[in-house]
Image (cartoon, rainbow, N blue to C red; front, top):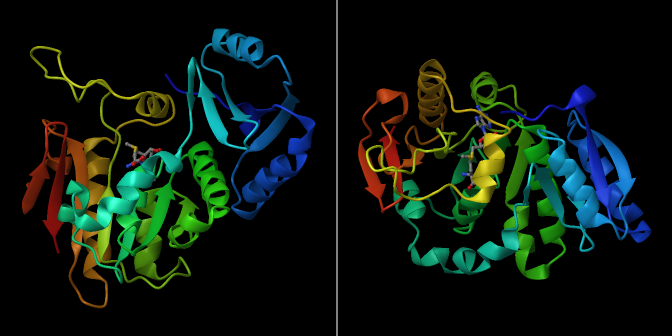
Length: 290
Ligand SMILES: C[S@@+](CC[C@H](N)C(=O)[O-])C[C@H]1O[C@@H](n2cnc3c(N)ncnc32)[C@H](O)[C@@H]1O
């Protein structure tokens, strides 16, 4: 398991020469956000399938693909994954009706400040931000952060997504060190967080029933993430939960909540019982009130 990036360099396939401007925009995102990524460019005009099959046979090797619509995907083994925020349009539009369990748990309003400390593909962040709240998205993996930044830029070109996109701030950082900096006032951002949301990695088979082996299989986006990131240790879980609670306690109102997403049957994060839980057949949101 694990993708090896030698010298931080990764191949970026693009499919025609007219994309050089889009490639340049990616380079600018990398530089502006100080991402430790060096792009190794390769034009694969007309031989996409063949090149991707070669890549697949090279085992753990990852690459990036900028398709003819300038959508950036991560290629990992046989998988090709992208945030694809446009597919969430219906959920984002109807989220205001509070049909989303995550919103019942997070209980945020348009003037809330939310910290999604494990952003991943950013889907939960979008639902959280659909309420009008500002969402700061932390993602420790530089490649995932680049996918998010590129998706934010791509979606910002669509007028009906612009307001939502403007409420998202994406930062490539480890949540634990960010929480510490936030408490020291060292992030340059006013620390007034009402909700910290955490959806840490969990073992790949967590959605399956431990006795029967039956149940939901993880989707291809989560499978690809399992090549990049590991579940936290118990000590890390304890650190995440305690520091997240301390960040919320520090806000102007002096109260708020930490929400943790878990597979329905999974044990509590850091083995600490929540104040309240909301669940459906697949997932559970545990709320810790501060
Ligand atoms: C399960 S995924 C989150 C999926 C996300 N909720 C979504 O809707 O797409 C977990 C993500 O958190 C990131 N992550 C895990 N631990 C982290 C940490 N300590 N700091 C920042 N990001 C972290 C992983 O790299 C991974 O991308």
